Length: 229
View 1 (cartoon, rainbow, N blue to C red):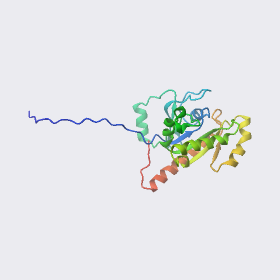
View 2: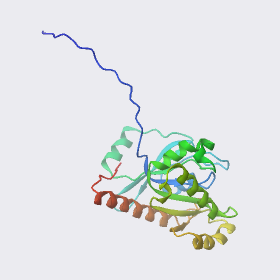
View 3: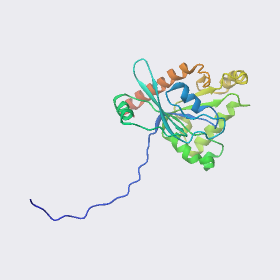
View 4: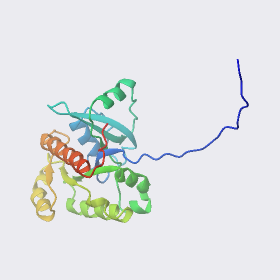
């Protein structure tokens, strides 16, 4: 047995920050129905309640397609979902697209009201955005204006990422009356759905796949390796 003189080791404290949390982010005000929507399009089962800020911690759900491409739907709910070794193995073997349900944004979020900075940082880590609007609100299109303002105040250009508008709660009569007005005031694609009844969620799932495929093609054309789960 031979031994050589040892040397002093190195000790470092590293702080790592996750730069990509999800491909798509569900962005909206509290009680817009984001958690219910995630339940409707994936196997995630977040807590749903009629009071604001039900969503607090991350969860992951999966959206499956006929060609076996899978979309992993991650969101911030009240009960962290345990990630088992089988979950990790499936994420490695399959190309997954993560969808994050961001906790509700309120006016003044860029000033850190309602933990706004923390929630906006989650949005920053998403490649494309789905703005979820509560169409039962008096003027739902103003929600979009306020959300855009908060995103731009936090990071200029953040609100310009590839996006679509999800007009939620279409099962309510007052929501159906406002749909055409919303469409006339925006240029983005508007997808009317009811997270409660599942109405028209198929269109949303298909458009999510279009955004995901566009993301893969866009990063590939720039010589950047797309993020896959």
